[in-house]
Length: 151
Image 1 (cartoon, rainbow, N blue to C red):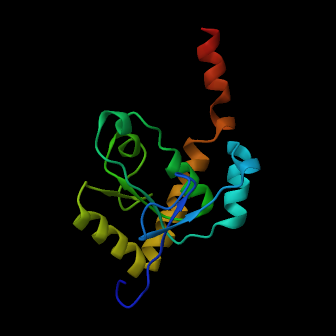
Image 2 (tube, rainbow, N blue to C red):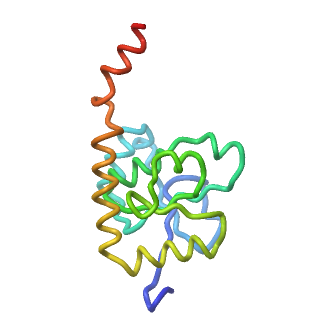
Image 3 (cartoon, one colour):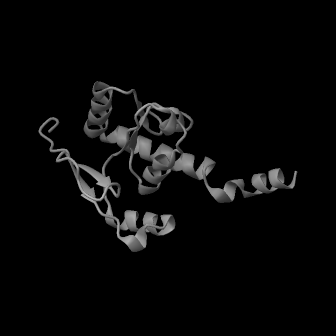
C-alpha cells in the first residue's frame, strides 16, 4: 500500500506455480506462447498501469535484450528498468522510462513517482512510443540490413 493505494504485482508466464505471495501469476495459454501470438494475447488480456523489468546485476543479465522495453511501449505503459546494459542502451531516464539502481529504495522511489504522477506516466508513454516508431521498427531498418548483408 502506497499513499492508501493498494498495489498489486503480476508476473506473466515464468515458473509453473507461484513461489511467493507478493505477486499474482498470469498463465499464458500454450497456444499463445509463439511471440507474435503472445503479443496479441498480451494486448488483449493484460492491462497494467506500470511495467517493471528488474534484473540482478550479473553477466547473464547484462547480455539480455531490451525486449521488455519494446513490450511495454507497445502496451502503452511506462516502465521502470534495471540500470543495466540492456536498458541503459535505450532508456533515457525520465524521458522514455525510469532507470533504477540495484536497491530497494531506488525501485520504491521510482514506482512511487510513477504512481503519484499521471503526467509523468503519460509523458513516458508518449516518448517511448515515439522512440519505438522512430528507432526500433523492422521496416525502418530493412534497407540498412540489406546493404550490410550485400557488402
